[in-house]
Every structure is written in C-alpha cells, then in structure tokens.
Length: 113
Length: 112
Image (cartoon, rainbow over all chains, first blue to last red; front, side, top):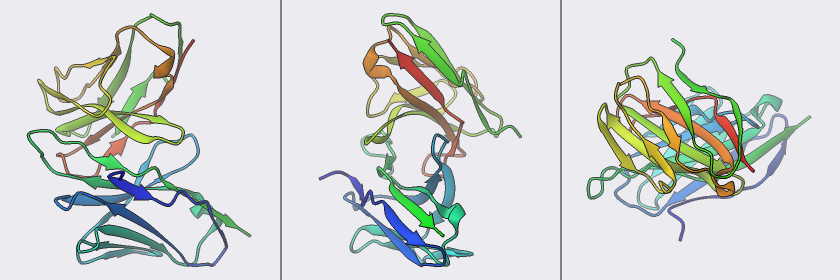
C-alpha cells in the first residue's frame, strides 16, 4: 500500500458546487499535514495546514481524522479559478534519523461554467 | 523577499554530461530539499538538508549530489546525466522540518 493515497480524479464540477477530497496515509506516527495547490506547469503552493481541530480559510476547510488516518479538503462555492491539482503532504517525523515528507499524487479539479 | 529561486528554468543535456541546478532562499530557512516530479509519480524527494553542512538522502538519491555550505544555497549536481533523469526539479525550503514548505519555480530538464 502506498504511504499516501489520493483519488486522482478528475473531479469535474460546476461553478458554485461543493467538492471534497480525501487523502489517506499509512504511518500512524505522522506529525504534520498540509494541502498544496499546483497549477499546470507551476510549482506547488501551500493552500493550508491541517490541524487536529480542523481549520477553515474562507471557502476552504481542512480536517484531520487520526483514528481513520485521513485528511480532507472541502471547497465550497467552487470558482473557475479553483481548477488545479490538489496535493496532500504527510510529514512522518524522524524515523531512525531520516525525514522524508510524502506527497500524494494529487487530485485534479476542473470547475466548469 | 524573493523566496525560493531556481536556475536555470530550462535545460537540455546530452547523456553523460554533468550540470548543477542552483537553488537559493532568502528566508533564513533551516530546511531545504530537492524533489523531482514525473507524470503519474507525484513529487519524490531526492536529497534534503536540515542546516548548513548537513545533508541526507531522500527516496531517489542515485545519480545526484548535494552540498549545503551556506544557509541560503542548496545546489543539486547531476554527475553523469541519463535520460531517466528527464524531469521537472523543484527546490523547497521550510523554517524547520515538519513545517510547511515553499517551492521554487522549478527547472525543466531534458536529457537526450
């Protein structure tokens, strides 16, 4: 099983829709979690951190479920400009002295008029 | 602040050539890393550094060398380029490991 898994999509939704992505991880000792957004042929950019208590930033809500080992991203009132690939990142913390954050392969979102 | 900068933006090499990808950050971040991104593979960590003078291997280190002589700079060296190293390379930095990372604009490398 891959350490971090995301549904690749694409998720094809109309403007104004609500869409949710999940990201599952296998390492129960993982310490920190993030969602990034990546536009075509651009670098990933931080969208939001994911906290145990959940957090919200405008139309975006991120949640962490440690018991079931997944994080989620909810986008409300989708805009055309939300079309991008969304990457989840799981930081495992030190393991035998090494440290390798793991990126999901990304979920593609297409918002259409 | 310029953030994380990378040069060059594009590069074409012949098999067997060597080159250095440059990465610099002006945020006084301790942690820097190099990733490669290939279609369908996601981002994979090549090497990382938790501070000046300290480097370690990531998931896919073979064929690459790094050094970290200053906090700001973290160059990636391809010793003898191979077609399998054709990829997009991203440099990233964060205040400390486990913090959010900031990415440079990337270098698109083609090895013929």
